[in-house]
Image (cartoon, rainbow, N blue to C red; front, top):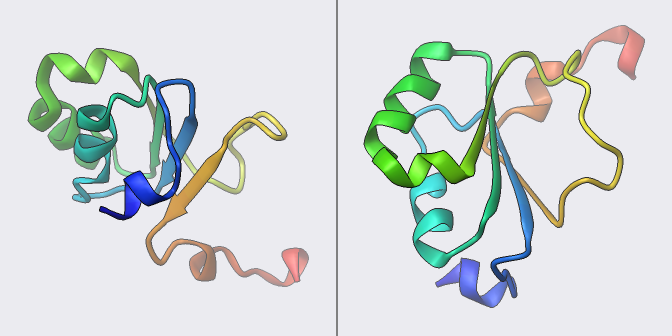
Amino acid sequence: MLLRRAGLSAASRVIDVGAGASTLVDDLVALGVAHVTVLDLSTQALSVALNRVGERGDQVTWLPGDLLTMPLPQAGFDLWHDRAVLHFGVQPRYV
């Protein structure tokens, strides 16, 4: 599994940006990663994921919001995952 090859541990800090219907959060929690953050514009998508993960979702930080305006800690994550998110954020002021 790719996540195991990434060298993640319980202490790893992982963020999944634009998670939507992705099941990556399920895999991270099952792997024992204790510091998982999921960020998505859609509160509905976050709710679906939280319901799917169930009680294990208590160890996940669920952030509804826009990546471009969300205050995230610098060097706050060991692994960043996004699925086709960054190209949506290209605006003249960021280029």
